[in-house]
Image (tube, rainbow, N blue to C red; front, side, top):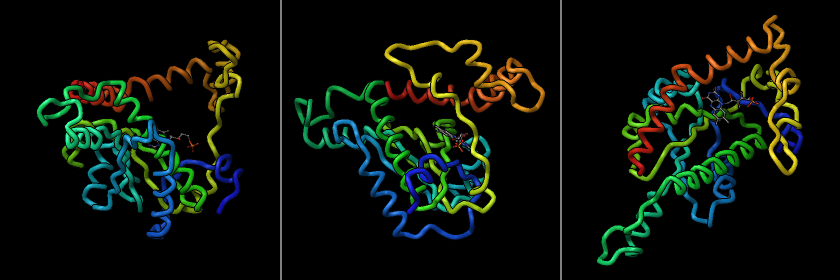
Length: 248
Ligand SMILES: Cc1cc2nc3c(=O)[nH]c(=O)nc-3n(C[C@H](O)[C@H](O)[C@H](O)COP(=O)(O)O)c2cc1C
């Protein structure tokens, strides 16, 4: 097992994996840790889909913004915000229904957000547990895109939403040695009592000196194009808006 420093301060996302498979015992141990994560009201408003069908992985590698390493990952986990199981249990019990029908009330946006919290906390617990075992991982946020396709591919019922996906596997030597990306200084992230907007010096420190001769403003304009208005961002907004229409 790795030390605290190795697990939390030495971690980096891993996108290339050695051929070695992940042992069943290790998978069990990581999933056990994930299922022990805090969960709102102890309701466990999430589900995890293990994807081991190569054709499904190949499809996800395309539908999640064309990221071929998804298909190469030895272990792929989709984390669903899941109110379906709870609603099924309520229906079984006749909760909130006068004549054995479905409950009169249904999950709203707040319930979805709470379920997303549960799913993400379980996912991050899996990341940390995997890291402790020496296993690398990478989140795939693009699972939120192409909602209709993912719903059909994974046969997702109405009150579920795939909020994130994890690719896991043994890191290649190159990935294990890859430099860690920098982070913002503490003072712009950790506020005291009330919120403080960033100042120009903060912004210079956050985005200045990328080492390619670009000014801070140029760097930020490029980031806007790359992450905020690019194809995947537009598709994610469309996909989530469509899912929300179906949810509400
Ligand atoms: C919610 C979320 C979604 C992410 N989606 C992707 C993704 O689709 N593809 C990818 O290669 N990395 C993805 N990442 C990984 C980030 O790019 C990575 O964490 C970030 O660049 C910092 O690098 P580090 O994890 O090595 O510190 C995602 C991370 C998070 C937390």
